[in-house]
Image 1 (spheres, one colour):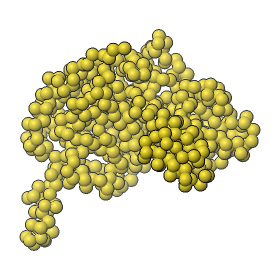
Image 2 (cartoon, rainbow, N blue to C red):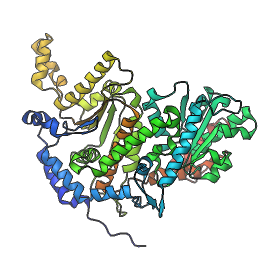
Image 3 (spheres, helix red, strand yellow):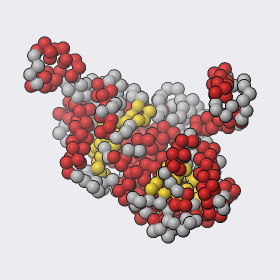
Image 4 (cartoon, rainbow, N blue to C red):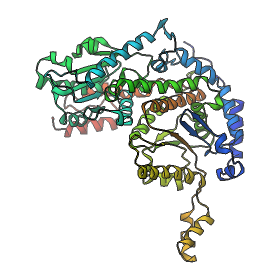
Length: 556
């Protein structure tokens, strides 16, 4: 079978060449100067969607930069790709799958067909099933085998089957029933499941096993440990009906595990794992905060979907964020990018976005199957709560030698807003975005030290250390309150941003073959650990590591 003909390299596009030249021209331009010369810069370089504000004025950009980036989007056929995403075309071409997580959150979308079948009735049926179960658990009508209500829910999954629900349950914690505890187990290290089991009781625990294929080894090892623990107390397997739920596309395998079909919630191959929290994978979210709030989260994502699909490129939040990332990654030489939420309940958002971004766009082969050798693709994403980061890695961002663009995310208020707390929090938000942009000049540093009463000799000694170069880019995202609808908008904003960048880089953002290699090798190695015989079937390092492990493990 012949390989597809190579497409014109992205670097040969006229807009790409123009951006290269433009980046050279902007090397000596400071954002301080840009703000001083344009009093309307904030108004021109910010967007709103209802109460959500994206301020992108603190970037190393001009109108010319944006014009070139918009031209690049056009030359990469971005508008056409957006339509292909929403229409159900098989844009995940390496797995021959549609990419329709957007269909999970728009009940008014009309028929969306996959292989000729409208998938919306299936989606609505699963949503109804989720509502029935979540309301039964929350109202205490769902009882365990001993007649007691459920007090603990344990979600067992990995990757998108864990990070999405974990992040959302924490983000929406103020909306949850606080005597209904949520737990998330993803690590096959036995300490994760055992530590969780220590704090719960079999007769009041509901387990949700989340695996599309119901063959993911890490998830099934944890699920079997949970089942064995449950059996030791409950005895009769018939009790599992009140304590085990599956979210899977493999009904037969879930049934063989011991879960009745009435407790199996379907998911579909046209929903990628890292985009699956909108499906029954989000069952733990619905149980925690209620189905009404879960559907509000879906509506928020739908708001962003419609904005992304319909807004002009130059007024489109995900497009702007995506193109700014292209600008820094491909033309200003950055390798990393930071997500810095200033909301305690968004503490898992950087972890969630790291998987979404790096699993989606960590690719080095284009859509024609050709190695990408002349431009960079996905950056390294990191981050944590902003206040924590200020006392950890912000030092490197402010005065280190690396340029690290950042997104700073904050709510204007919260459900439990204490004025002194929140105003102190927001003062840090505004101060950090200003500090990254402005820095501190020698003259400003000298004036500060003079005001502190330092003598001239000490000032001269300390001056190099007190100067901040500034010109460090940030986007700021503000919204009124971190409620379910806002969370939906925020997550969908980043989903579509990642998609935009994948289109520009000409890669498939929806497969993850790099994840599979380690799984395949682990499947080969696992039988080799069954005995204590030395092995020599790998490279000398891997052989040495395995044999050292066999020599010291306690069950030798």
